[in-house]
Length: 469
Ligand code: G3I
Image (cartoon, rainbow, N blue to C red; front, side):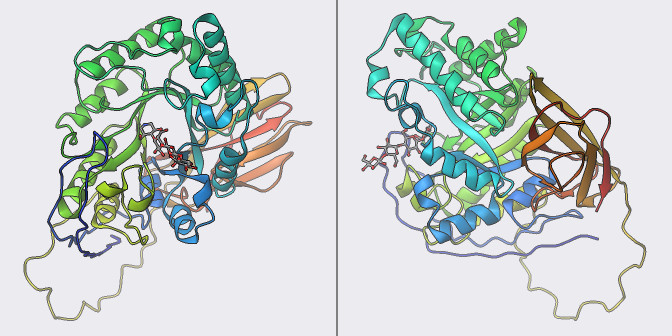
């Protein structure tokens, strides 16, 4: 039975002034008034549930010091199932003095997320920017070693807790050259990027390893250069799993017409693609339409595994004057939110142009046949080392949508689960059952979601059983 959602919102359009080079123009004057109709048996009512039903995550960049703001945390907990620390995992935050690591603020975000079943994108291990003073002053082999040590220490500290790491950020130059960006890291040798990826894989074999950049969202000289690098890495076995497309858009840098095609060509190289820092300056219907386009582009690319918006409320944005996010400064849903949710739910109709009928709804009782039950299946993949393991479990709905699942498996003697993400476990040893968390229980037919757990000892063998609950 179709579950129809009808939403309407309207708000005054705030005036906006540009404050960064990227930010200019795009003042939409349209008054937001959207009626969206979500189609499908399991239309999600939040960004997280709607995305999860399509096998994707929906995340937000989060600032640790805002977690005590109840409006902010309330939206985060309700709407999102992935977080990216906005600044707290950057090099200047995690290694302010060489060899002295500080994880307090990043830990607060990681704990907030994982205790609620949200996954975490790590951002970022190696970057020309936000380097602490000691690193800015380094060069040559000393810098190379310091960079690799940083990657190793931070990725090891968070081993098993990070869904994807932005291993290297923004290493290519703007403009039409397709060259690497000049930086102290680049001057240590062209192989610094692959060295960082190899160090990250060795430190955390469970995280997906991403290259992340901006102005690579359409096909251009810069994205061509990144494409060539990824192609080369895949050919030579350099460990790379994903490419992040930051997707900071405004009128000077609009959503490219070949956005989907560009995501697809990277996916065709055998990597996942992720929209990692989405924000779109503007307001009203224009902004809403652009958000819808971005979401539909991701959903059309099967290896586009998730979307992260770069902040929660407009006032949380690094370019707040451009009102680029999904919630206004008071935490109200904008029309951009409605368009995003509607696109995630896969259906949209324009506002009705004629008044709705005044006749009462039909009184025919609903059909009494039970919903089809297609069951579910689960498969485990293990990353093991001497004394420990991380298990990633893929749960796939059968031929019908499901509204909750439970996966049962048995751990060998001596094995103990130390933490679990995106599921709730009944125990830590022996026969353990994992049940879905709030956002990943409802899956459309054939759609897959993932959860994971880390443990000491030896990981489980054999096929787990999956039951619909
Ligand atoms: O927290 C201090 C505060 O104590 C101090 O008074 C104030 C004075 O300037 O600075 C505050 O820190 C600022 C921090 O944001 C937190 O607001 C830094 O100066 C400022 O440089 C930093 O900007 C961040 C920027 O990256 C630079 O690292 C933005 O928040 C963050 O949104 C932005 O994110 C980047 C991604 O990492 C990479 N892609 C582009 C994206 C947008 O620029």
